[in-house]
Image (tube, rainbow, N blue to C red):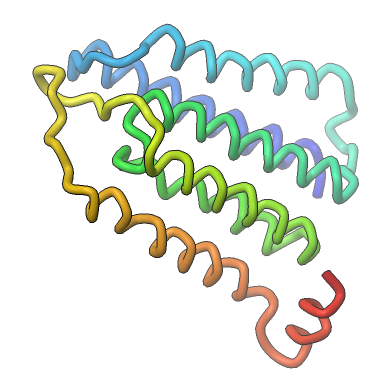
Length: 178
């Protein structure tokens, strides 16, 4: 995968994250760690600028480099989710994007590593996160069963995304060589 592809995808994510943070803060007037959230996005801006100026746009990333970029993007999104409600945040499904990209273009081994990272993140965000921004500053209290409900569904979604490119006669070969 080319560096330029991941840099462009990250610029799209940065634009979406920044516009959402600004909209929720200034238009909806929800109380959440606005400056810290922007700082988390700012780290991605700095990384993208570094990559754009340090390497040629045509650079093809190694398997480990591409996996590292996707892992970083997953961790960065996880930080934003931690600041804004964890798995209760309606954007939490975006954690699956790195696995989808990896399953489409990277090896089984790299994809399994990202799946492990995401399962760990989902398990932590289920219990450890700042409150979901809510009108008036008081999000509804959810029963424990509502906190646990997303975990198996997230795991099932990750497994389905991972399985798509590896189904058919080559799946046994692919899995046996992890």
